[in-house]
Length: 111
Length: 115
Image 1 (tube, rainbow over the protein chains, first blue to last red):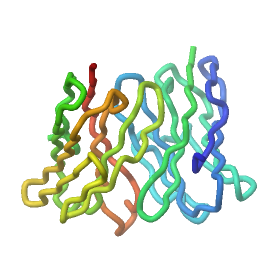
Image 2: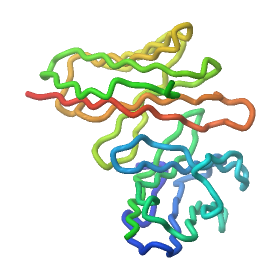
Image 3: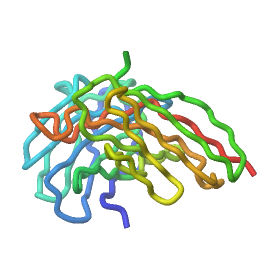
């Protein structure tokens, strides 16, 4: 059974629109991460979230990105005004015993 | 120098072959090391953590050489199902300061095992 699920599996949006990607952990975790992978490129760290706060973010994670855990369970990544270059797979990850386990990802396509 | 560097391959091997992947990392302070595998358009899946003493899990053996900043993965008796991209992954900070948990990925090495 996966540690985390993600919805939607595929999101198509127009440039300039807002999208919210969701991550649902199977059990309680303290550490959450978002990564992205542009097609054909390596997986890149976006942000880490611990105890309901951002603990670290990368250069990619600019003002158009935000994360929150609105109901203490789901963990969301919001992109306020999408750009073509935001098209990628977005993976949520949880941490258990110093190891990270990834969700199945959301494929975001910006047109 | 890239933070994590891998030979992209592809490696094409017959079933039953032994294949080795290498990886180098630039941050000498890195503490945690992992191998993940990734199937096409799927999420990275943890294959194994890499410990200083080296570790083995069935057909898979991982080695770490801190002095050379080098990590390796050996796959023995390759199966068709081993075909995937193998990702070398490093936690640059390894648990201290504010970088706890941030993973840095290599580009991946593509493996194809054929009958």
